Length: 107
Image (cartoon, rainbow, N blue to C red; front, side, top):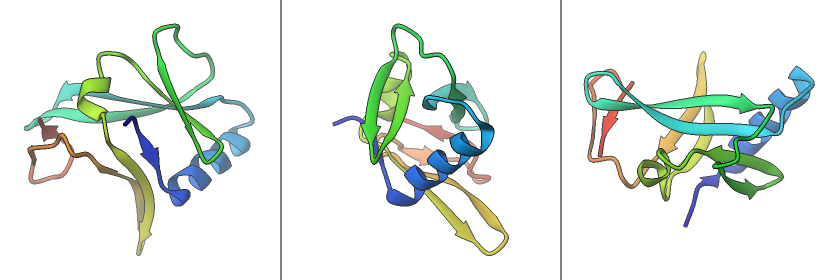
């Protein structure tokens, strides 16, 4: 199943990589933190790791480390603007609950 990107997310990632002048794609992962236990982490990839799983969609590569993959399987990454706020949004079928502030989740 893997990871999917919306057109808005792919466009934003492509524009940002072009603007920064380098990069192969986006690394998506999870880390232990927050009141619910896990949080998403995003960073741009300049050099892939040998163990990364790579998903390519709409001309954009998404890199995921093997430890994060079970928590992210089936996730859709979107990018939206709502008023003055903009950012990535995660639609993760593995989430069982999120914290009140929206910064962390549990599976």
